Image (cartoon, rainbow, N blue to C red; front, side):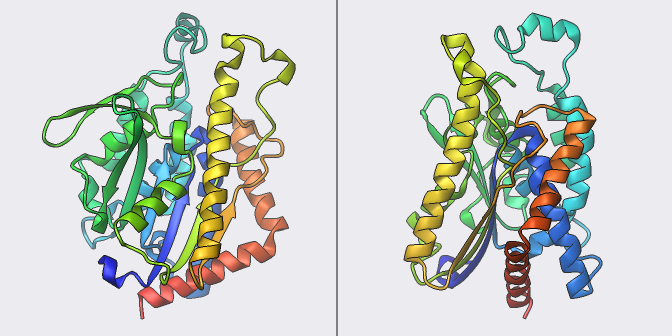
Length: 339
């Protein structure tokens, strides 16, 4: 796809949120299953409905995972359900620290809460040596550059491929402060970068992506956009307001506020711009209430993993009009791309 050909664009953006990535993955797996039924295509992949995918942190894992090619047929390798089950299994090892490590880090106060070793092993297992150029669709992964003090964007597809392995881009985008050490990664030419989780500035990648599309003329105001933005759920605050007094008491609450606040702000601004400046365009934001699930990034208890999926299912059951609108829009996109 060239910028001149971008009269229609279907976009998927997924927020950061640690293990709460189970929520958008559950939604995507349910959409995928419904579309398989309506299209009578049991081997249908939901990623084939989209031209462009973007994500921050856990959202970047999801969107990049949906874009990994099967070398045998150049179709997607992983469907949404596969990635959901991988999350449910991998989370148990990624967000686990020994008693000694927990004591030594003082719960993330003295050093990072978790070792990145398990995370890196999973990235290597699922993404191999794929580079950003290999991804099937236009892709954007958002991180933050500690030296340049600004968002760092990895791109693939017709955006022009960043010279990085996918697993390195994801290691950077998921390096959440306190939870993991900053990522020191190298591009394919050997240059080193010091990066952290893009969620500190753009937990929702929507506004970064919109700016990128406009500044590089991939879209104009005449472009028909269909944009699905998925959050990782909205829960009750993970802190007591009366306890916020002093630097230590603000540490985790501040991370929570930065993540939820930046995602809400970016999504609202993007929706306002799309609705007012782009003709015949649709921006759909889904960010389910977490109900009984924890808003923490690392609660891997069986009860919480179940509650995250229940929260997503409850959204589907109580928002049937929005859900049907998403299905209709994706069917339209699929038929347009395969006409």
